[in-house]
Length: 77
Image (cartoon, rainbow, N blue to C red; front, side, top):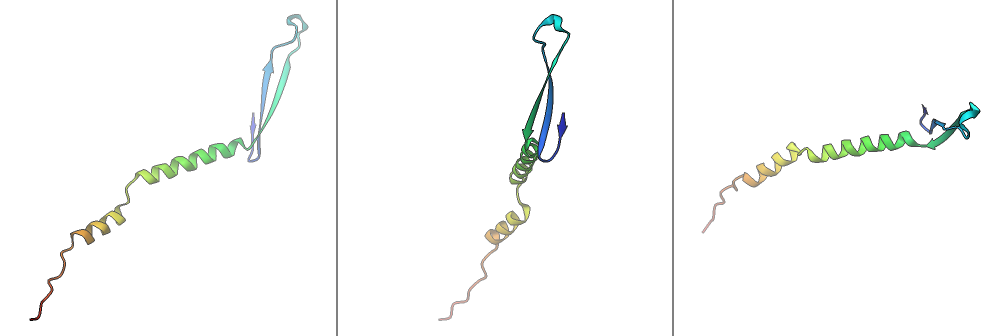
């Protein structure tokens, strides 16, 4: 197996055509862009983890504005 940014190469040992031949077949598979599937999976997992974690700054600001008491307004007669 060989991995690069653009493709992966896999070798598999196939069973011989005849048992008494003493030969074996090796099959070669070239799979393009497999590494990028793993990179994309990691990016999606990291994004999901960041989306799950609550934002503390935004929540504190929203709570502060909701809980702030309005200033007393003076009414003039």
